[in-house]
Image 1 (cartoon, rainbow, N blue to C red):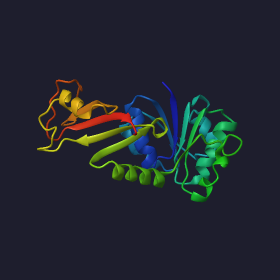
Image 2 (image 1 turned 180 degrees about the horizontal axis):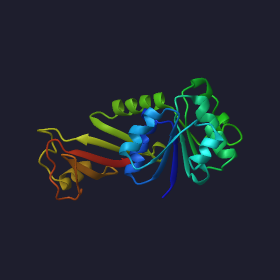
Image 3 (image 1 turned 120 degrees about the vertical axis):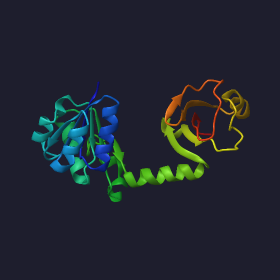
Image 4 (image 1 turned 60 degrees about the vertical axis):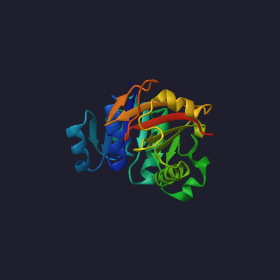
Length: 216
């Protein structure tokens, strides 16, 4: 199982850590604020370390020499950038993600290549939220819209409304309605329980149906 090192135990770092722990990854999280680390250590199966995110000594203590993925999401762009550079130059960490807020820096993507700041992937929270809202607006009635393969494929979640065409109908009927659309139902959730999406399942009001297919 890959070893993941998260720098920053704020809202982004803690939520990502929780998800990764639930998926059974080996997670270590570093922060210089003990009050942020303690709640995570109390309820999650992960390792916490108090220290500076851009200190080689702290990073070694956190196990960076065996890290497969570094996620630098402290509130400070400069700390995240330095941490990624250290991870690349000193410890050869293969995947390095950094949270960057400064739009001026983002205007020069060449800064982030291996000869520069050595950031594989830049996370821009404001832009992520904007793009997500746009995708919801463009896809009416969607609960969620997720893109894959550089935007060529999408997964869309919709809720079956009472009295709608699919309320009380089985998936075989839905397949006929969608033909020849290149998409398929990959999951159905009813009262937070997953149902196997075969042709005999009858949809009910309140069901959440997840489709995947080409963006077009």
